[in-house]
Amino acid sequence: MNKLAAEFIGTFWLVLGGCGSAVLAAAFPGVGIGLHGVSLAFGLTVLTMAYAIGHISGCHLNPAVSVGLWAGGRFEGKDLLGYIIAQTLGAIAAAAVLYVIATGRAGVDIGGFASNGYDALSPGKYSMMAALVTEIVMTAMFLFVIMGATDKRAPAGFAPIAIGLCLTLIHLVSIPITNTSVNPARSTGVALFAGGGYVAQLWLFWIAPIVGGAIGAVVYKFVAKRD
Picture (cartoon, rainbow, N blue to C red):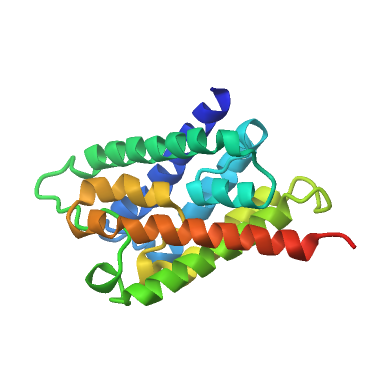
């Protein structure tokens, strides 16, 4: 249960910090953190939590990461469902807190509430195919970096930095396309409050990251195997 609690709290922090920066800070007049600030916020949530709970649960914070690590032989299948449930509940709890905060002033319009989407719901109006390819490739690269940074042969103690910076880079590239998911739990939490088409499009932000995560982990396992 301590591992599941850690995953709940870690994912809560990721959604509150990452999506919160987009919903609150980026939208506040005069603050202007924009794409760069939101990207950094997501990276910082993972970096800080990796140091805080990495030694407890592994700090997955993401069903696609859990599935990818399982596919790469780094995580036991018996723990997979519990992790995914804890992560999703943590994301929903964070979205609920963020919703209460965001609606705490008169006349507020939460809009897409930092949700992910394609076609008309894409920030740059990118197609479903563009969104699908983006989410698969970005999540695959994320898992490749995670697998490599946490390899026993990698320099000790630096994995959280590499992983956090990787997530920052992923957001810098893909926010205009899908508003960046690479995490089904993160997508689910905010979409439930945005409603409408964002919920209808959730299927892509579950399937694509999970497929991409498995691909990235398996590719790393092949590349890193010893002769």
